[in-house]
Amino acid sequence: MSAPPASVKRYASVDALRGLTVAAMLLVNDPGDWDHVYAPLLHSAWNGFTPTDLVFPMFLFIVGVSIALAMMPRRDSGVPAADLLRPALWRALRIVGLGLLLHTISMWVTGHEHLRLPGVLQRIGLCFAAAAVLALYVPARAQWIALLALLAGYAALLAAGGSYEPFINIASRIDSALFGVHVYQIDPVSGRGHDPEGLVSALGALATTLLGLRAGDWLRRGQLRALLVAGGVCLAAGWVLSHAQPINKNLWTPAYVLWAGGWSCWILALFHRLIDRAGWPPIGRAFGVNAIAAYGGSALMLYALIGLGWLEPVYRHGFADWMTPRFGPYLPSLAFALAFVALWWAVVKLLDARRIYFKI
Image (cartoon, rainbow, N blue to C red):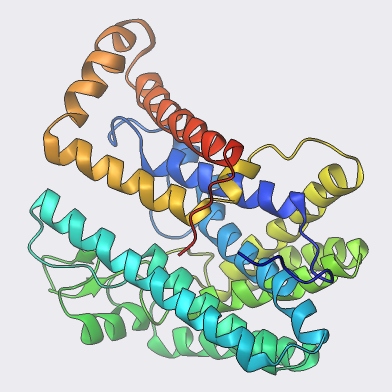
């Protein structure tokens, strides 16, 4: 594997933040008992914002940051954009393929009748590809214009739909027409579908990634103040816009983009200040340098436990039976999730210690 050009700088803060975000994904995706999860570890039922609702947009934000740090310096140093884009598009295709593979395995293990086509990795792959094109071929001002156009255009589309309610909003209606039964959820009454990672709401997700792209450019130029100001502006704009359109992760509304983006800018600035400048240890880095592998590997482990019939007895005997009488049902559910994260933390730490990094 050839070394990257000298002009490309790796930021421990970005690896750490990416890693902690992946760890948070595992924490909220793998409770011992879905009926007993502490409220902050659940997504909002529809409108609203919980700490869990920050996890996925934070990851997409970091995707944009990473593109700015890895691709733009190479482009500026004279590497042809086409030479950088080809491997990026191929990587995006592999990420989408992995997402479809995991959904296929999940369908087989759980006995679900239909394959879900949209998904988390599919969204990451699509946003990565689109943001890479803009990073390599479009100047900074035009990237800002594209970001604002996405927010304004998507806001107008949602408003034109006439409703922001489940299944009857325009994003769900279009996704239902495109994917049919191959979505996350079907309304048994109307037969309409909805997918929180649908194609239409990917417009908002791409806006999140582009905000990360611009934030990454500030980071590589040392413009920490710009990150702080942008965070405040996004939070204020998101709050104002939420009076017209809801903050809603399922639809990835523009208000949600701005609200989550503001927190993402501030958290990135904090990590950069503490880790890159003050020398704090980059906790989470091991997850960050094996991010997709950790996410995919942990999903495969979960599917294996379900398929073998081991998940329920492991949780019951290892956590619920002895913890519930003493602490109630919520703590053992959280303890299982923490143990799952700790197990994978040990895996990625071992891989990092041996300098083994899985890239797709």
